[in-house]
Image 1 (cartoon, rainbow, N blue to C red):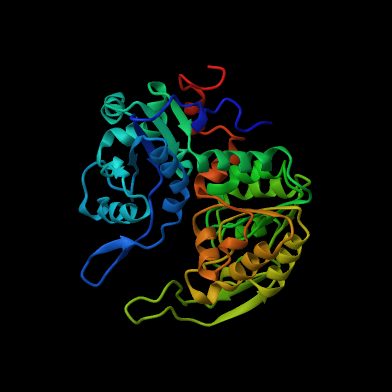
Image 2: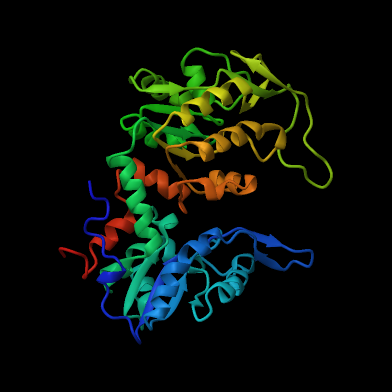
Length: 391
């Protein structure tokens, strides 16, 4: 499987010297709000990922205009999500690149309105998609421009497809996937695909409790999705090795959890419980025995994929499991791939980002790529561009 087959790349564009190029970027970055309400970019990882493409286009003489969404505005201008703080950071990173206003200020972006597509591409000679993190969304700025303009995948976009495609095609064995997060419903489809690809599937986070219940354990007041118990049971019986927590760091009945706010921290006793959780207790992290067994599997892997935290790591009392596994992924001798989002944030907080084989810019997009076995709206749109190889 050649994941890049049929996708036009920068070298497939006509000469851009003196031309206007629209670049769809993913600058949906976290903001820091200062004491006077001044917003600044808190983490420019996604912006930095786009720099090689933007700078190459500038070097080739193009007039470059970037476009991105930010936050979740409801199809109308919203001062909270104006691009000014992102624009200020972009002027430092790549002077000469313009940045449009938030794409989602227009309802036509999310509805893929043809009229909005035409307004967006007016006056441009070419289009580049450097927003892999949004490639799983059929938004106007993602799927519209390749219908009309010579188009290409950006350098980072192409690398994302190449790396993730390699996981599906020929991963070094053993292939171990570590999947965390809260809701089993959000990741059940990708777990089913991974079960056909990996040698070992490690399940943590809140969604692990539905799997634990499916194998007959009591999970107390932990997160449980009874509507997916049969799906989890079927996966457990599918033949793939699935590792689940054997001990849990749990919060006592009546306790609260979460990040401290306004001087009032969460409360309640926390203890490690092996096996069944008593009534009233809430599991919020994997225990030390589980962290050790998960880490041992990671350390033996030829390829590791990690997406999603192993506990409620926003509360420091329940961050240990994620920290231990993150360290194991960073130290693993095999090739490691980490999806964006919370996993990337955990690595950044621990200073481990530069020890990962490949750190994806797309959390949801990475999992959607695997779930759909390489077919995402943004990728498929590029393959239909007028200059696509074989078009």
